[in-house]
Image (cartoon, rainbow over all chains, first blue to last red; front, side, top):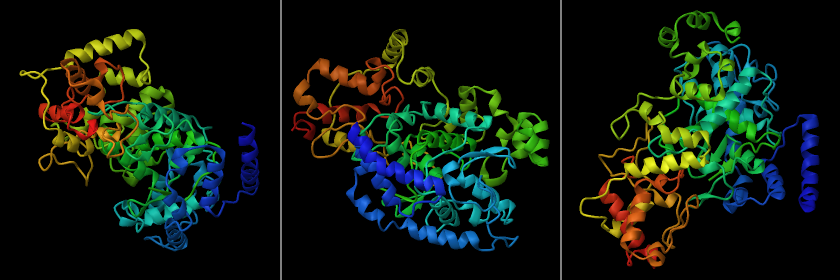
Length: 281
Length: 234
């Protein structure tokens, strides 16, 4: 216990220093190594290859692509996304993603990063809903993945802190918890089947445990480069993939059920530093 | 409370009945259904809101056909066992557990010619494979091309040749330690068919009771577990 505390001190001090200046950490690997120092976790250390890969995380290229895209005047209105409000004011990206999902007055909804980006591309830039810039949400070559990864990177290393002050934020988080435990489908699965015990595996893959915040923060750190897919993937993609594996119904991207799940899973990682962009197998 | 900050269009929708506005407001921005815009989420319990989001809000493609000939709506509707196990987070009371295992026992149907072992080699393939029953717009498991697998290895270690999961207990050497007796066969058959007969609120799917595996597939997987020549028992 004492050892753990002593080990955790420099990391905690580091995190506090960054929080004070609201500066994202530049290297996601540094954040991950800090987590590994704090807990003995098979999930965090399962793949040496991933740790090696993180130094050259291909998602960092996606960040660069996203940066160019973010500041470019685009769409029928020929404006950049600089006026988009991700919750901390128009154009403020630092730490914004670590505080999503959140309630937005202008839409009357709790929104995650993806749905907020969709909103800004439509309302600010004037893109039609079916424009590929808006409708194509998957793959490292999509505008969405590039923009999401760039925006998320501005929160790297900062503690997850999704607000729960608004009653709808609390309601969505609690409904997300309910859905997490809701067994359904012909296989009777729920999210808890895989994510409520430490060190359990699906075949050779170690599963993250929602009860271990240091593990869970990596688990919910999306966008991440999926080595097996050779693409950067989003939170919404992860939700869809889990439901597919559970043999549940196909979710609609940005729907409230998906945002409720993301609200709950983000709340579980509260206070832990984000690893953005991450590398996953 | 949500109405205040809504757009004029959405507010107009909100004035209608839910059924009407579902039509009027469908296809709103971002592909997300705004049917939910008509509901005040803060007036519902977590369970009510959760059920609403899954079954009514337009968050899922519930009209998608399933491989078993139903729709995703039926897939996502909970039966009694799923409700109790969800509510209690897999820790049913003693009374609930008794009811669950009694009800599970009633679902079990036995082969007319007794519980036989099938082909252990095919059983091994079925145990390893993960194909079957997945729903997706672009990656739908088509059972006309390939029979569904058992996906046993996802959760269980079986033969030492392959790495299995650890969500369920290890079954390595199962037949070797238990023996291929009539009692063992019966127990294994019943657990595969409906594990809740023995383990109320088990994480394991009801492979027989829910029609995930046909009788031949169950017999083949049983052979993989119990046959002395199977790699499980080497």
